[in-house]
Length: 146
Image 1 (cartoon, rainbow, N blue to C red):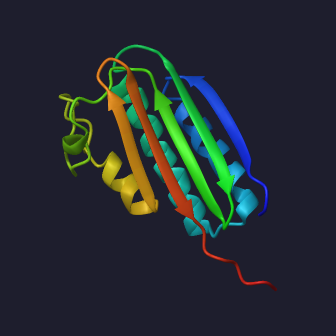
Image 2: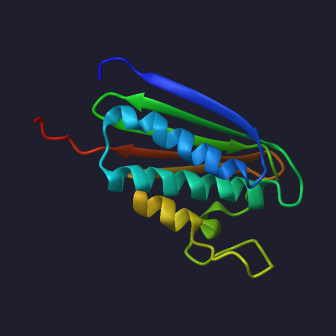
């Protein structure tokens, strides 16, 4: 793919919109003809990032979430999920498996670990009171020509 292609979604932090973001990114990345496993990996990683923004970024309030996706040369995609919510005070702790800032006991604390397992690269930028941006990258395997 010689030229880049990109998309941008903006939506309110309602849990019903998580599936919208997941499916939209899956449809967009389908241009690269990924395997079903690769497509599932992207969908799950996007789902985790958006759910984190909804549950942790905005807690019990509503706010805006922005998802961008960019197709790059050599069958690579970069997906960014951004909120302008409460931010993360300790990113290193938040990235540890089983860590959760949710005291309800309903969260497993595996969001970042799942994203890091499924994607090639995950970076997190956050400022308390300003929000969080999660950037995920994945390169898809070359498909055999028939």
